[in-house]
Length: 140
Image (cartoon, rainbow, N blue to C red; front, top):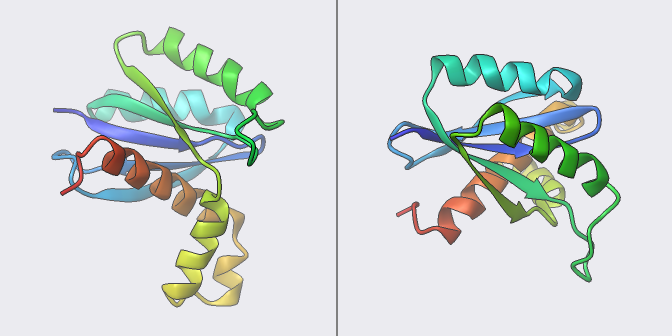
């Protein structure tokens, strides 16, 4: 069974989280500069088995697509062309950045660590992955 990899897509940076091989634990993996994202995913998938990509859907409170969706949609199309054998699921990512910041505060990260946007992106991707796992009853 391959891993599940979550993507918190951003215009400049993208946070990535991944499950363990048994799909029990969601962990932050890295933050990459978005222009290098597809190359990173190709290299990662060459080393690690990944079955599912989960991409966060950026939406407003009224469930309409946010401005970011005009960047996310083309990315998802490219992802499906490059990885036709992998499932791509979407999940609502509203509030993940705020929840990520709250989790970092609750986890005791220092102020300078919380200001690192890459850390917020990784934690956001992890929250997206945890939500996905819960919604699919993959997480005990």
